[in-house]
Length: 375
Length: 224
Ligand SMILES: Nc1ncnc2c1ncn2[C@@H]1O[C@H](COP(=O)(O)OP(=O)(O)OP(=O)(O)O)[C@@H](O)[C@H]1O
Ligand SMILES: [Mg+2]
Image (cartoon, rainbow over all chains, first blue to last red; front, side, top):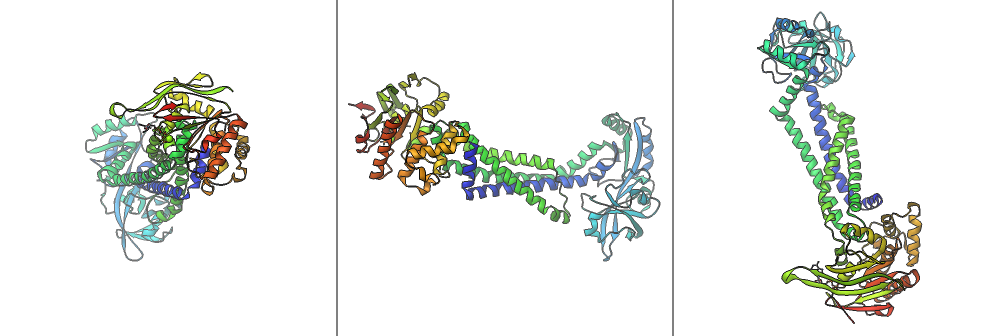
């Protein structure tokens, strides 16, 4: 009966176009919302994810990576005292104002990392290397910030909070949740800088555990001894940051609702056209039943058509997103688009379409072939 | 001439209490191969109901339907689609063709339903259309054909899979007088030349001249 599905589907072009429009609409909206959301959450947790540490020690009641209070850096000795800890290091997260060539100022997020060990260092470098930031007023910026900061070139000198910095390296693709440009410098430089973090203070202590150690247990244990801090595993901190932006701020909810709305509207359009199509063919379906077709033969026709629609509609929707991608990213929005995400959203869109055929299936099931003699 | 289809004291009651209607009342009837049987009767006399019971689409309230020597009225609803597939071709007053399929494809659809050899579907469909004199219209959509042509396609479709019995409800009602005659002539030929047992329900007085036998139904009963 796949044959019948193909034949009738492409015969009714008008309805096909409406159905496809519904699915494309759903696919584009859902893909855009979900990839934007994941992109934002990816940015919000980028430093945590890319730092090779198992444990994060932060200020008490920290909500997310970007909102932190400094605390004494010497507390690192408590972390190092644990036999399970392989190494521990410090990381500064603070804010500053970068003077632009046009005279304006731009707020930037500053990460102070250890250029000797590379803990907290920028990844995906396109010019220079993280160790170049060592021993002076050197900074590393990200090429995606060029829209905000103007042209970034290695060797140029910039003024950050009234201090002159030489740009010694460039990374690509490191962005913050707040969309403020991210600037990396050495830990010592960041500390000597008159920002939120004073000398002798740090924003984070990060630690790597020996292989095979239970991270949760160590975090619990440390948390009991470090009463003035929050001690989290890497995953725990990622989760806390995401939960904050998603739930507490309602940002995630907004994306979620828009995506769901897209699915509902698309599903309603598909359901409506499939149902209209079924109603229009009721006489023929009844005839088929009289001639010995079983319900499942006719379901097969309906579902095959829905699947073909879903594949084409999702294909077009994905293509549109891919075409618009660079434009959207130039506007400063991060999109996370991976084959797995396409796979999952295709599955969701397909399920919505199949679900929307529910009324059609019910109609066919209750269709009594006797009635075709009276139609 | 051997009997292919029989009804034995078949009764169909619709509804209950005040709404109770005895649509078919103890009808005993036999159809032989190569026979064109005409069922006549006024509106509401139970013709369509009887035809639906004969075609294993509707369960009788009482009585038996015997198909090629086998009592089928006792079988569960699950078994009926396959029985219909094997034994019956149906023709309807309003043709009921798929508008998005060409004439040949409408026939092909039923061949597919009956699991015919995929390689021979096109040839078989064309052969069937030839039998009803429509070989030249195989590429036409129903919307581009006359009523008589559509009804011929419906007959070709009913013949698909070579079922021994063809049941037709008012096959000439939507056709003009001359086309109706052509269709009746065709039906007679299908019975005699292809050995089908054919039952037609018709108001059409012309039909009597083509049938081998006619029965008259009134209030669900056969009137001799
Ligand atoms: N599903 C049903 N429920 C209740 N009564 C029904 C049903 N189907 C038919 N009837 C009744 O059964 C009787 C016989 O109907 P049937 O359709 O078999 O008559 P008919 O001879 O085919 O009529 P016509 O020539 O108008 O087509 C009628 O009184 C009709 O109202
Ligand atoms: Mg009738």
